[in-house]
Structures are given as C-alpha cells and as structure tokens.
Length: 342
Ligand SMILES: [Zn+2]
Ligand SMILES: [Zn+2]
Image 1 (cartoon, rainbow, N blue to C red):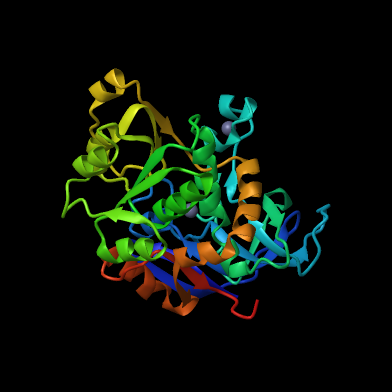
Image 2 (cartoon, rainbow, N blue to C red):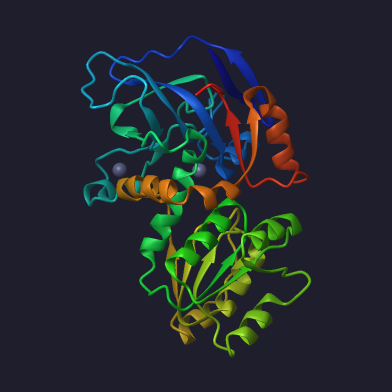
C-alpha cells in the first residue's frame, strides 16, 4: 500500500509499505484525510511529541476493509466509518474523573503513532464510529474539527442570544462562526486579516472586519453601544488577538480559547477583573462531542461544504504542505484524497 510518511523537517514521501497488521484491530481503507494545523506543525518539525517516520492524519474517514481476530464489533466490512483519534492512559486523575480528553498523556493517531494518511490503517474498534450511509465520506472528514467546536461551545455557560465575535477565520474560526449563527447569536462580528478568507466568509453571510484597515476594537465597541460582545471565540492563536480580546469582550463576557497560541501571549488581565470576564480553556473533545459532531455534519452538509477549499491526491502531498506553509495559497480546510473510488 501507499503511505505518506513524514521523514524530515518540511518533507513527506510516499512509501510502499505492507498493509498494517490488524489482529485485535479493525483495518480501515482510508477515503479522505484532512490536513489540520497540528499536521502542519508536525510537518515543520515543530510538534513537541511527533517523531519521524510518521504517517500523519487524525481527521479521516473510510470504509471497514477487515475485522481482526479477537475483535467483537457491530461493524461490518464495507461500513462507512470515522475515527476518533484520541487515546489516553486511563490511570491519571483526569482519566479517573471522566475527563480522558485532558489526560496527562493524551495521544493521537496521526501524531504519536501512525494515522490516516495512508491507503490502509489499523485502529482499535473502540475508536471507530459508524457513519450514516447517506453522509458522504468527504464532508465527514469535518467531524473531528466540528467536535472541537462543539466541545468548546459546551464549555460556554452563557446563553447564545446576545452578541458574539470570532477572531481568526481559518477552518476552526469559520466553523465557529457558522455554528454560532446556528446557535442564535444576535450579532456576530468576525475578524480576519487575510482578504481571501474574509471574502469566503462574507459570501456565507458573515460580517468580517479587517483589523489592519480598521480598528476592530473600536468598531465592535461602537456597534455594541460601547458594551462589547457577550461571547468571544479566539481562533487565530495570534499575539495581537490575545491583546485585543478582553477589549472586544464586554462585562461578564466569556472568552473561549479554541486555538492554541504558538508562544506565551500577553493579555490585559485588568479587564478580566474589572469586567468579571471568564477565559475558558478548551482542548479537543469528549467522546460524546465527537458522536454529536456526526449528526451536526450530517444535518449541515451544504453549509459546511464551504469550509473545504481543496481536495488533493496523495501524490501532491509535498506540494500541498509546502503551499500551506508558504501561506501563498488561500487554503481553508484541505483534504487529501487517498482512495478516490470510495
Ligand atoms: Zn485536527
Ligand atoms: Zn490519563
């Protein structure tokens, strides 16, 4: 089989490998694998845990090719499936208290061990969820990032009927903005510097502010009678966003940190005091968030399709990663098409 292997800083190669051993596991024929921001940091050699050689990919879908000896499962060969890529120790305090998604030694298929950017991958049965047959495997690759947003939103205690803002309209920010609209926010302000990303969002009916052309703090303050927004989703990971988020958020606002900051960022904590704001940390998703993301994607296929900007063959993977890293191509969610016939 063909496997895309991360071999060195900024280098991936297609290797011919044996189909993985699948005793006590389920063998999946992979259809599509999404490229996540964390795959890009692996590719660039910046991920703290990833080691070469590695088959990346934790956002993938496919069909059940074979069920290994010793596996009891309701799955059948040919079923459409998605993989929850998280695995955990089961012994630490987080795991014991039912919060395995923040396990002290949380691991992912595609980051810590081989994942989905190969024609076949072998995964334990408990990590595999059956997809409704009417849900196309291409759009179903968004289940994992949608689960991240669902998890973040479930951490917000405020009602969604007030105003909201999203900083950063990459795939996570765009998903958040679309899902906040669904959740019933009264006004939604999005902030994005990349003009093509902004245009994509505008074409979906979102209001987008370019913080370079206009002072986004002042703009949102003016539009909200000086109050600021009730809910703010930080999806850019940029230091400038960290500085402005407490000023955009209003009194008793909740600020959800959806993206991971590349470096320690500075925040004006005085506003957090004086306005009694809450900053919410959020990491991946629980098993229930992941399960519910399947239904969300199924029920919103047409809208979510706009989050996928490119579908590339596995043979173009090096070029595709290079383009994403260079920032020259306007990419939103990019998928690798691995077994195009599925
Ligand atoms: Zn991801
Ligand atoms: Zn644990």
